[in-house]
Length: 154
Image (tube, rainbow, N blue to C red):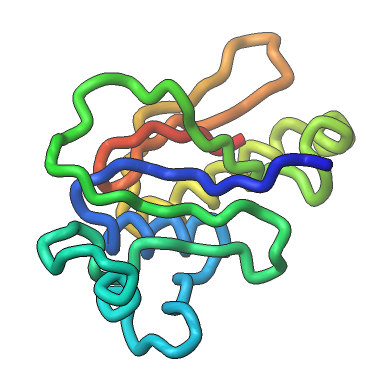
């Protein structure tokens, strides 16, 4: 049986990133557990002090239940080096990326990737540049989320 997991992203502003990535991935902000009006109430109930970071909306979930829960963990330190893990957002195909990418002409994939890059810049991301090479049947755009974490759209 596959292991169940959540993805944890350290950041300075959990609610900002939770809202950005919910919009980017089609996820939803996770509501507090049943019986609790807020996440702060739940954290106090399990014994965390009020000084513990992460009292607002800091986690997102896949509304279909297919993808992992993502928790944005409040950390005071700013990001200083390149990510060792990043998201690849597949915007250029309609189905499973690797099995369908070659069925769609490169020009159409470029249009889809560029449209998604524009949508995500409207949510607060920054474009770092196109990732392509002459003669290569691949196109992607490098981006950074509002806290500078790198990700790609392909």
